[in-house]
Image (cartoon, rainbow, N blue to C red; front, side, top):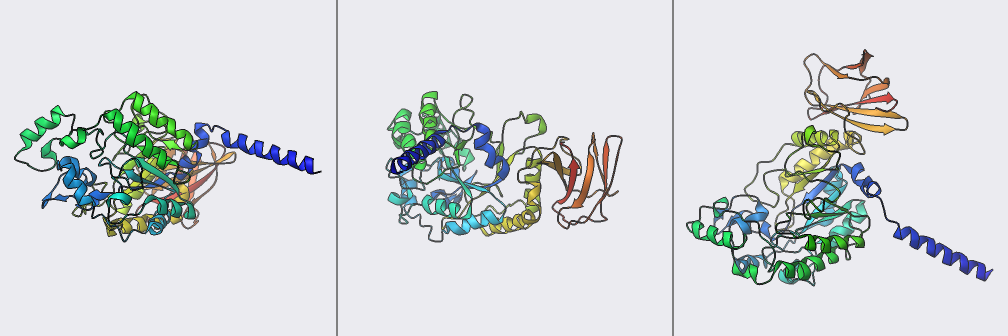
Length: 458
């Protein structure tokens, strides 16, 4: 009996090992991501201290690029960073806000182009634990909060650009993009000769040294020390080589289920999905590849104290529906302050989106692209329901004649109702056309969703 039990235990252990070693297909890895459709991007770092202002001047461009566009010397930037002290950081509140807004995953900048790591790193002292008065890892409590609330966590990592760790690359930006510096001619000549770098301290090591001594070890730390990592979001492959990309990509075996994007090194390392930035692709742009639009709420990714030009919740809800109707995901950004708080405008926007998603989220989650493209009156998403289908018709602009139509429609209807209230909606079919007769007024000014249950697959 004891021998039999021992053999059974060994067999179970062997089967578990084989299961753990199973290589997932892309469809298996992407399944949760395609179901999620909606996530939160977080751009946070020491650039939130100047918040778009350096030496009393507003620096042009996006907030996280202030070091580059302002041509701030490494010594000055790193000295400023010592005061980073986000004492109001509450990762559980952040995760809860994302979840309440209907978001299913979070991607945070573990290291942006200024090279500052939000985590404890043995590869570089230029990190939140070793360089700031705060002195604590910011990613560990966020990972714990995500696990607690069932939110997937991903890490953005700037693998090529690094403006502080020597050897990192720097995308060249003209001085006038930051401010009208009287020495711009001299500075621009220097950056042209030095591959975008503006400070000799940036070039005391080679790019290969940087990859081997900073990027590879740090990515290994991220994929080892924070539990299950759902996404690794590379960015700006400035100066990347195939050799460097292979070294970084080989680390993905540490997280067999991980999803990566297309920014490691183009075109040889396409990743799992494309990343249109600040735009929603037209139907003609889509080629069947998974894609995710990343977008800011205002005009910047990293926090800028004076950028209050926020999109409305209505616009962002419609953007989400437009993206879902084309089969994509929406990664919507928040740029926290240096104290560790979401800007009040972002909080209010998230609340309003959350109210809408609580009622209408099923029109987004797990849906597929509309087979009819886009409509003048709004958007359509589709969900399979056994051998049948569900259409979600999101009406943006209420037609004056209170009628919407879908041509090339040949299925039988089981029911059509307002998703929010369950109220039946009148319709007629015939000659390959579905006609829906709308109520007199739009119940929801952002988007009114009509749920049509259809017999058969669309």
